[in-house]
Length: 254
Image (cartoon, rainbow, N blue to C red; front, top):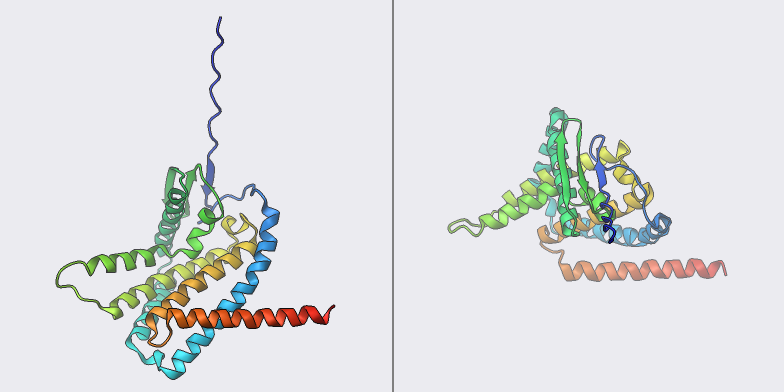
């Protein structure tokens, strides 16, 4: 008499539940690795910060970038976002929607499936069978609405008779990016479980680095004098200078 084949156990679902906007804290494999990784990332953060602020200062003083229409439209979008976020607290539901959609998109990008998706005034959650650092932290470094605005702008240019309007593009980028950053900072200050997933120190370093990469790219695109090649060259020079300082410091202790 043949015995029945036992069914394989169901794959457990990782609940990305948010008390306001975030995920449940849970077990993170190899979590002990993340702290030293964050320490190593401090050097690239420093080099990128020095390069970005030097480029920003240079283009502001030499090119009067601050007086350009693109700069003012971007700044105007940021200012309006700040006013709206302060005046209309219920706009948070728009952020929560974008937050959860970002989680879902990154789940799909990593080959996972979303089994439940909910958004409400008190927060939202997704339930998925795929969870990792990128899925959990994506809403903090991937500005969902900014990406949507840039995509819509690009599609609009494909319509015959529609011409490029950089001021319109950067106004929308400023509005959506500032909205993203304002709520990102608020969520981090509230102590989101997302941030605790890989350790607060690791998460904040990664979020800072990736957001600075984004704003550096925006500066290169908008500035008349900052180029990709020039920024990369300055980045390399600053990295070499930083390495030389580290070597000298190590030699002093030998």
